Image (cartoon, rainbow, N blue to C red; front, top):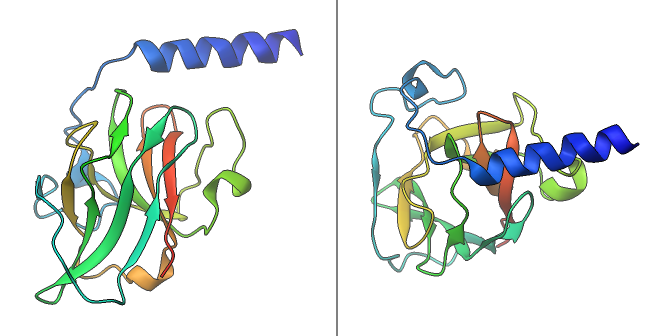
Length: 167
């Protein structure tokens, strides 16, 4: 038990002390269907869309994460939008993922809330740890199959924060 606590503390300290590292292999990631342009992300102010959009609020998993997120449709394309109150900690290899779970925290285990391959789609590297952001969801992704958005540290398989998507 003492060893588990020591190992958990070491992992938390390691994650907390890391700085963002750009990932050059997102185009080779089989979980990233958007291989034509892995950096197709723009910072923007969220825009009004139709009432069928899904939204949620980020909650802490491994590290404090907050803000609102929503899936919107504009000109036939789906996007993930973070509002200006979005904030999370810095970390290595952070990405935005869509996850199949409705409650990622209940279906994974602390302290890292690791996710399993096949349960998520890697949308894009996280461009900023705070503020409004907009990420295009590739057209071949069936959005209705996914029920949450997460900020995930790919390098350590650690979920920083998650938001369940409701109507």
